[in-house]
Amino acid sequence: MRILIAEDDFIARRQLKEILSPYGDCDIVVDGDEAVRAFRLAREENYPYNLICMDIMMPNVDGLEALKQIREMEKKLGIRGSKEVDVLMVTALDDPKTVVKAFYKAGATAYIVKPIQKAKLLEEIGALGLIT
Image (tube, rainbow, N blue to C red; front, top):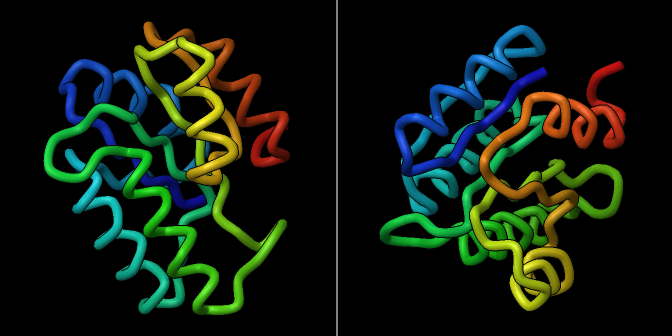
């Protein structure tokens, strides 16, 4: 499995990498702009990501905007439904308005709230069918 971690907080990045690296190759970016570029490059190299763990609050381009741009790229490439990359939003924001934005406006696949709990993270990824 190929995983992209988009997180501006060093400790959260390190924690996500420690948890996820046994399940696949992890690339790390620090903002939404880099996430979009990494996604594009991975598609161009024909080695796409299976999972993106994306923080919502990041500098430059936030996670919701980055996800919208990723979904637009997929749409242009004819990638739809189950062929889309699974995107797990990882955020400190737990209000219903943000959850609705993440799922219905940006196209998130799953959502967890910080602090990151290993069991919850792996449960969500397992529910996506990416790990057993």
